[in-house]
Image 1 (tube, rainbow, N blue to C red):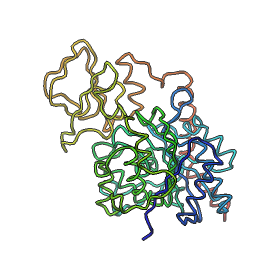
Image 2 (cartoon, helix red, strand yellow):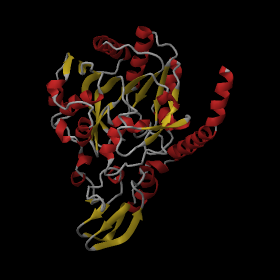
Image 3 (cartoon, rainbow, N blue to C red):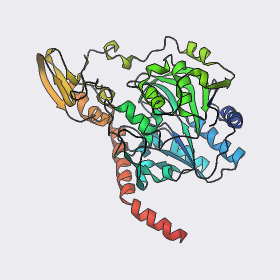
Image 4 (cartoon, rainbow, N blue to C red):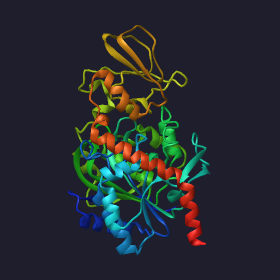
Length: 419
């Protein structure tokens, strides 16, 4: 077994040449030797040039990574950048809004939406929920995987880093499967097909608030590791969580992916985790306690009637406009206001008084449904209805549909070219 190591380096600004030096030195220290087909997976869950600037791995991180692979390891044309964006919206739209498409063109690196590739059904041996998975071609052909997460607070699972990044290896066809009160188990299921060889975390700016459109907080660090659970253990300490308190990390430990004990991890670099944790003191993420949000909307968190678990996995992710999530035992009294039931199982076991009751079904409810249809019940403007964003959505959705329809034709043409 290789030594589980996490390297913490100071980095106060996004400068590709500086980051390139940090990554190169860290890979040499870890003894990494990238080989064969290389897949780089960033976090591009959402992006929008008007509203969302800090939800995704910064482009300068990606530029530095590609240059290290080419200049220090002779990777050449064996590199692919792949992602399946969030909310079920076209990933290529987020590529354009984050300018990843321009970066990939300038670097001459393939940039692929994992939803637009050939999908192969693979069996998972360690999974509890995802017994099979539709795996995109770039992922199942990858011989060396580099995960580049954006360190952020997360409304459901406390924070997102290496393990949570694997939600983005799923196609949109399967993304919402088990994305409910079983989300922690789902995350660990995906560590089997999405186990990275190298993790390089963008912690120069950390996201606080709702992870899909967070506010930036400057932390000034880059984290590099050869072990996804080890880097998440250290990241949890940096974010001022105890590793044992993070459910999916306990689940990963219990399935044999490694220890949560800091003493079992070798930590090096030019900045200590304690100093970084001190910088994060007092930095909260208000969406993790819905009752503390500065909003006139009241939130009632219920449970899944079948399991008794809090419905935190999907419906809370769509809190914009939501009031009742899951089966709520108590009274909901808003006689002159709209009450929106979010989720198929949503209901009130008590008195319900409302000017209007709207039930948006789904398990979980899709964020897009809430953004497009839910906010109007509260007379709240949705950015989804901005003319620019509407045109982008329609345009990229048409291209995505075309690419998905032509997957067999493109695969056949490639075989013939190589025949």
